[in-house]
Image 1 (cartoon, rainbow, N blue to C red):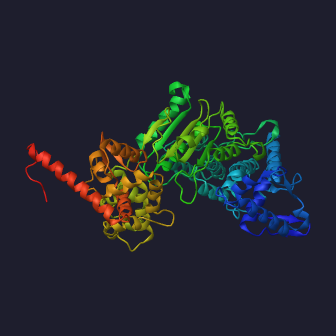
Image 2: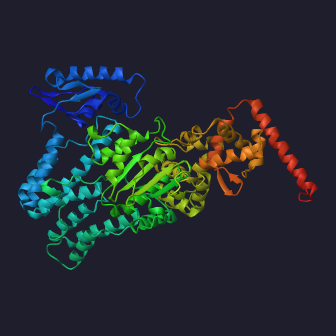
Length: 627
């Protein structure tokens, strides 16, 4: 972020001041309420005395910018605004230049289009807002700006190709395809440039590499433009792509701002889940055919325990289906289980989604129900794909659902969202052993390429075949060359240290699981801890009742609640199991309970076992009771 006046550049000192200025500039000329500014400045988690502190930051910002710029920051009704004349923001200049590029292309003036595009791209100095670390602020600016940046880059290359500068474009396109390997337009432009240089073999190699990546990463074939170029190069056409896809322009000559394209990158080592991917694809097909039951919006609710790969599946499916949604793809983390952040309120999430859909901040209603109505209106008659990631519960999700068919919503949550009655349920389990071994093999270092499946099978088992644990284990072997699979397996055999071993800079399995535990009520937490005292992996309501000193019916309700939170699995009616890594957490937690309480619970459990064994023995079903 740079501020320049008649005396030169004015540095904006302090992270909070830079975020504050960015937030006001996002609504230049319009007052932004102090509560909204606090949300942006503290990235969704404002402190108790946020408003008085915000006034201090405004004062510091004014002082640092000098009298001329400071006078532009005006105290408005319940907030602040910054006065900006047209053209004073480089984002405004960028928008204007994008319009000039569109007009030049429409008029067939490729030299002017190239010049305007180069000038527009020259305004960029690295990644926008890299020195203002507020995700709320970045969500306001970046999706549209980055989409425009990519679009103008494509237009610039189109213009240069029309001007016959294909030889000079090859190095730039090599870099762009490496940075954006899934953006087919860059791949197509590289094929065109190489073929026009007489390098047909390299052009065919670009196609083959792009196709392999799309098939392996997303499970889809290249689009029509790449396939047509491939045919033209094979046929020896001297100028392939000369009559290819035209540049998309908005009415009236302005450049199309671009539909939101917010999908995160797909996980490169994604493994398995073909049945689940097919289920989601089938739901989309039914939606397009108008066969969704009740004529409702198509919703797929993906649930599972922490680390099971819910987000990875949703993103993978979304990339596979993105071509079916020309009106864009939205992604929002609802922070239902995010360490250090409270869950997003539906109203806050709606504000972020509306800004992503192009609604200026000043035009977003204050009332939650009005925001929801505007959101549904914006999505009506569109084909938009929406990922609502990391949802806390149904109440958080319902206001974020479109109101009519046409859109596809993928919701991920650790909680079983039973209240979304019309949603397709995709419940994730741990990976099959073969897929778990494959995932490990794709993440370990090449130095371990000779490791046998038997060695990896033990590590996979100790990780409970949980995708996140497997990725961490593979990363440990990749980044610690001295470690062998046998050494890692030895570390993981120690149950007390297993969760500590399975951690890296980004993930701590103990903390990840503990967030699920923290969402439980007090009685559910107590039962969860005491289940670690059970002597058998198989659990039922009678064991739970003994541990909790309650009746079987009450215990059964609490067990089902743990199932709904994906902290237990019910593999048969009334029969429950706990994942080995989750059990490790329960053991660590119960060890902190008072010793007398643990002893009493264990004593009740042993008396239940003894009573059951005696009953079975009297019926002739048990001939020997083990010590």
